[in-house]
Image 1 (tube, one colour):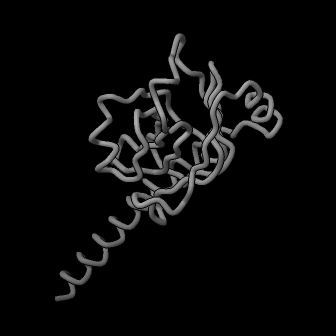
Image 2 (tube, rainbow, N blue to C red):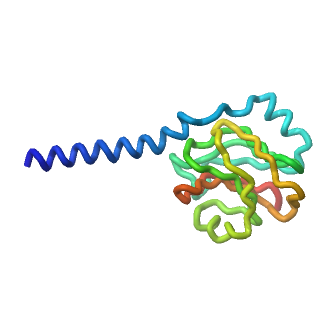
Image 3 (tube, rainbow, N blue to C red):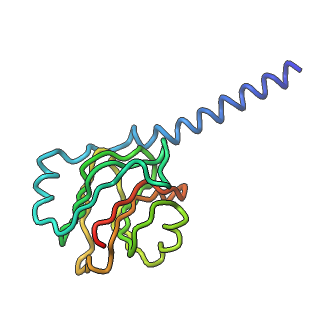
Length: 156
């Protein structure tokens, strides 16, 4: 009985440690977020903007985003906060979705803009010759775990 209890407690500690490591590692290795000046400068010339809200159907206490995304002809700029996590990507999508199921339905029609490595704002270069008129919303998605983080509609 003592050995079983010892096995259970050690297995529980190992599982908790791995889970905590998965959550904390992106925070520990996160590069510095762009400063307010860089974000403000990059937002000039914005063609579209949208708000990311925390209360979307697919967001929860571990997976959320809150802030403002602006799109110019050459850059996507996010000013706000994202919950920390690994392997986040920004996608431009043809229609607004607010959960995993909705995004998975249109993922093949979406454009992966780039990897999001900072959680306190980011600046990503858009691919050359992109036509923003082909998209109406943006989604932050966790590739590693297939989790919806947040989204915003910038065009009807």
